[in-house]
Image (cartoon, rainbow, N blue to C red):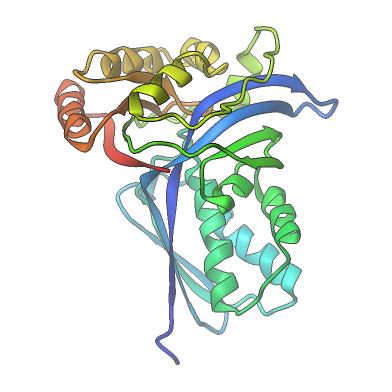
Length: 287
């Protein structure tokens, strides 16, 4: 057996903004979101094998729900689409919290599609790969793109976003899952008008100003379901040098925006001291 293997990182997805702009007849909500990625995430490693196997390790592996892992689903759908045997030994190293609003599962699925495409030496047309990704989950296409992106529709309309400046994030999660369908169901506000970022911010301060003029429409319903979200936002805002605090996705992960690594690491230390039971991770904003 060859020792050839492919390793792909699965960075955390961060919704810098998230507007709910409508609802389809089938119940799916329409979004307008500025999506970026943080320099922390899970890792997918794939090796040749005679059948499909999945091994999961890492600090948050035990919190994965039972049932078919999204990595297995991605592998199965890719093999079917490409007409190749479903055979690979996959190792998923979990570092991101589960059901946390930072696309951990979606990022894992996207990384699996990339890793197995390389391992199996297949090259699906980009549009076919995006369609396959969307069939796995709404956030998988943007995670497959892996760059700052304006995401519209239910996740299928992707447009490259303006370049983002160097900046750092501190991601905070209470290690309490928050159901995405429940958050959307709890939302009662009117639909929002799309408000995309149209110009590249010059620096982290300009980015914070641009984001402050926008919002995450799911914050209020998330706080109603899990008041800890409000507590995290207040704790992040209280950190020295925090430029902006916001919830990502449907929660419960929140993030603080900082101008540099030093400020982010000081804030992370302060938050960890304030609440030792929270998951706190400083990471660069990947621009």
